[in-house]
Image (tube, rainbow, N blue to C red; front, side, top):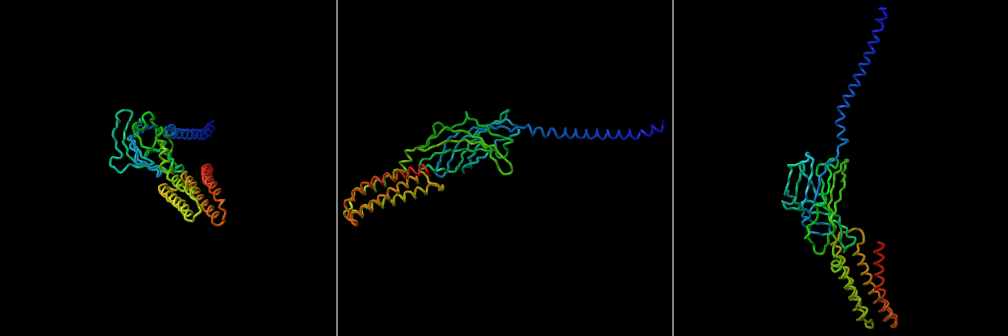
Length: 335
């Protein structure tokens, strides 16, 4: 019996050692879970802080929609509650502060309570990609794009303060009309899987259509009216034929020079602008006046068919007006 007891002891010892090893492994795994748990949960459950932003525009100056440049004097208000954020630390994404030393000036701050607040007065020069397809009718959006310098969108997002934003009621630019500004909020992505909250304050603007017509369309129309006087000149004498040619060719050259002068002011887009389509119609009218003069001269002096001069001249007036109008309409619709 004593021998049997001695035979059982190694088995008991092995079982005890096995249970001890299993218990130690369970204890180690529970301790590691307890240590790793707190560091993972906040990362999964954390949400970005909010910073509320208001934009109030005092004035817009140096406006050039053809080049896509403008300057704005405005107030920016930032409010937040996260105590870890010390300052607004913003940057203008589509512009830069003007050259004056007080272009970005902090005029007020209050960080004593749970709500932190900073006010800035900003004078900056902005740039957008110009869209001159409908020139001389100019319209578009003047954005003020704001982004935090260091905090990503996973750490901070902007929230617009619509009720506190706007444009100075008494501010006007002669010849321009402002629409109701709106906010837009997007995530601006960068290489390396980084994104930042981007807030844009968008100011709609359009020019006066009547003023644009007077400045750009009326001069070519005057060229056409002067050239059309050639239809009133007879072609019986070579001197009169020369006078008709002089009127038409002079106005044609004037139209080309005027068009080139306008193109020098407008950046090339690789597409026909509305003004280009109008000038093509003007060129067609002036070219037709030269062609009709030529046919009248041929009928009178070379074909010796003077009875054809009147019909050519009369129907030529109709064709020279209708054909450019149809051409302009086709270009407007199809191109």
